[in-house]
Image (cartoon, rainbow, N blue to C red; front, side):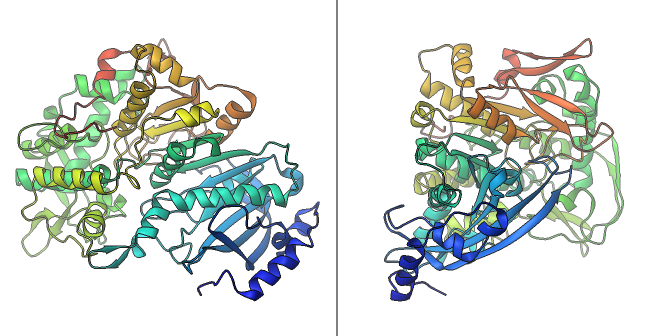
Length: 590
């Protein structure tokens, strides 16, 4: 249903509601349609936005429980009011749905939290909202105007062949989250009858696409946020999404399509060889930089591998939920070949053009080769190329603009990938790239950022976050030395590389690795109590050491265990391995 915001029924209802404002002191009293309608922001909230009071729904939830295995917040039990309503953009006749979980008035701590999504989703359903409620915050999510909370942007972004719906693009790029927060903060103040002089702390939390969405806010609306906890952000969109096809082109160029089990063996042997380089043998590669400096993958050639047959693409390949298919696989039994090792080496080197110039960065040593996607052809008995789903969709949707699946990569070269990256940077620089490095307005407003990234991320390279951190440092502190600039940055923006962690979560290949489960609490203490983190609190969430507390070093310091104790050391040679000189791109890549 499309709304007419100027409908007399809607306007009359709004007038009655705004005239009958009341105050509720309990969750039961507050979580009603009438009460919520009386607390909706007025027409002066933001130019061009009209909220529809008749769309309000409410639902009271008591004693909801969250277990100990969640990655982004600890175990908790809480009650909340689930509120949804719609708004429209004047003159468009559209509808945007927003959802807010509001804590019991007795538990409210003057906090508001916006959350983001993943892939092409602008929200993560209800998975992220508990992280706000347990800290006494109102937590919000939006559907971006895409049609429902379960509809992703890619389903709404293409109007017709060659025609992008730019309103959807901009809502996905940054407008949707901004409006969610603008409305949410005022709604929070109204719902809890906060005095104008009372401080409402505003936070953001998200990972992957949700991480990019967080940076889209910080880079544009500096004074809207007190703090953000951002994981593995998918910024530099055109580079990041095209990067997913790079591993495919490596196998195609080298004319070798390795069985998934072979690549898994290479990763496991790498983990085993590099585990103790940080001074602690625990099954976790905490120093992928030392691994890069001291381990030669060629030593894995000739090692035997074995994976059982699977009826549904099981084993190593089963983790690739974003891929186009998941066919049955036969028994995989053999030894690691020099061709398989060369694929691994080339993937780790990162994309270079035909003149040998570096175009983009790549995954760390010990990250799984999730983008090296191959499938078994039962007719020929051979492994062959399987096109990566995320990369193919980016080209079909935002480069070619025809929505057709990229079923083959015939004729695609390293130079083709480079051209796609650069053309996407030109076209989507103001919406999806999200790599503006000057954060002066946010810093001057007193904002704080905890930015974390799994060191073994197999979807968004950890070096991507290091490059952005370095871009901010060099742009904002150009007259300071590297160490001085890093120290200045640490006062308000801290980057943490999570040992062994995969993409926005734990890693089954390195189960003893810690994960920073309490980032929002650490951020709250920093913002509200000026308790600046020195290391980032983390917990082992699986494996034999489950429940153990660990601390993660803040970049550019790196972990090193000495005499059974972890130290955070400065190692210039290691730091240098994270930096790429992208001479294959004619403009700076922040």
